[in-house]
Length: 205
Length: 78
Image 1 (cartoon, rainbow over the protein chains, first blue to last red):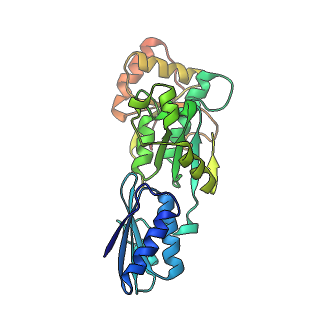
Image 2: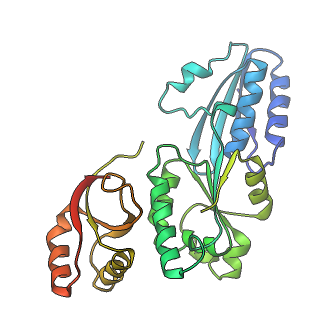
Image 3: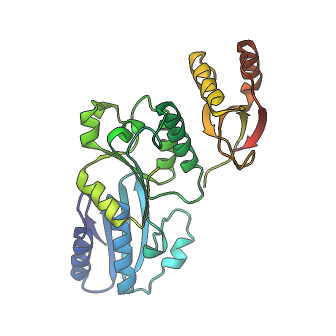
């Protein structure tokens, strides 16, 4: 098996590196690719399905995914999907929903009510049967993923259920919250723009 | 999939009463958190107080002493 480390690589580098590794195989064999985001998993899965390679993927830890492609076997994505430990992202089948929390309050009007509504929204979000793939937090919303936030446990519950929680690093820095982030990862504007551009649906309460 | 567990849910006659309940519980270090009123109770919009089932007596006693009126009190699988 050839191992490809595509952690930190932006689209389409993980796909390019994996294609090169498959070319190196020169015949039947497997390639394992490590990536740090779900979009890369989807892109790799799509590529494998197009080429007819067997593919399986799993989340190793938040921000770390393994995609294994096997060349020389028919695609077995459907049988793999039944294995509980494997998370198979069937490319276009799964809707890529991104929730954007851009303020610590929901709606405009009373801040007291808006704070209660936002708290209620994040709670209701983690009770849904279908969860978003990503929650982006920026500007006033960045405080929701930090120490002292009433939504912290709900965001942790979302993360535990496989939702990517990304908070704007510029915003954490501006509000002096950099050391207080308690859930998910820090992100930058390129990733925020990319997540929003690649989303099928953006939910902004 | 998320596991549902029994929880105590207390509803109030108004949104402001629910917000006051939150402030009261935070101030007195009482257990629970604010949630949107579950759909099992009403299809309408509202806020409720969710707490562990074993906190019922402590909460009702504290609310009674403080003169906080609640509308409904139920155990739900949430």
